[in-house]
Image 1 (cartoon, helix red, strand yellow):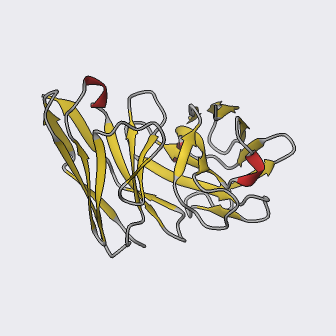
Image 2 (cartoon, one colour; image 1 turned 180 degrees about the vertical axis):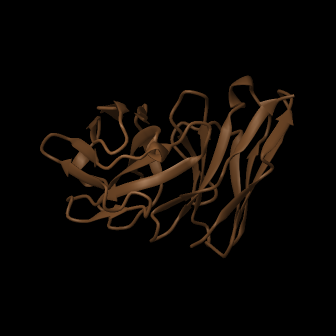
Image 3 (cartoon, chains in turn cyan, blue; image 1 turned 90 degrees about the vertical axis):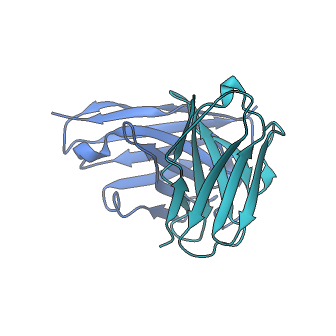
Length: 108
Length: 123
């Protein structure tokens, strides 16, 4: 079973700064990776799928990159509403959805 | 607008049972695989169970296999999760979610989620 490891566990930045979040897979997963944002008390929201495709209505400041084992979610200029938890998710045959442990993006 | 509305959560004693429902609207419910994902307090996301478009194929995480049963009623646009032999460690918020791609036997990503339903297992 493939394991996803996200880093850092916590990222402290200020509004307007650039955020770079990492997700590493224990073996190659091609481009089959997604990113989700979750705010306290809310359900997760799909941001990026297939490593670099933005989901519907996701602002252009969110971008994804990577392939194989190393993936990155970049937020070009942090807005106050971007401070949240972020999870990566692997698309595989089994189990259907595997999630990373999450990164907390907090205001510095 | 796609909406998933969950119901049925609550407090139950260890060993007890509970059934969650998830009503879908704003899309062709019968064309998409569906799943349940849970999140224990202060923890990350864990996929629990999934069901194919027709409902013929069901899948479970090892942690719930033999205790949980997923089903769907496409005529009523509703997904269910019957939970039995509940344990303290099943305490979590349970989300229903739809897959991104319709008319497929593969799993992709989860593009819409319900608001979540808290299940608390405690004596």
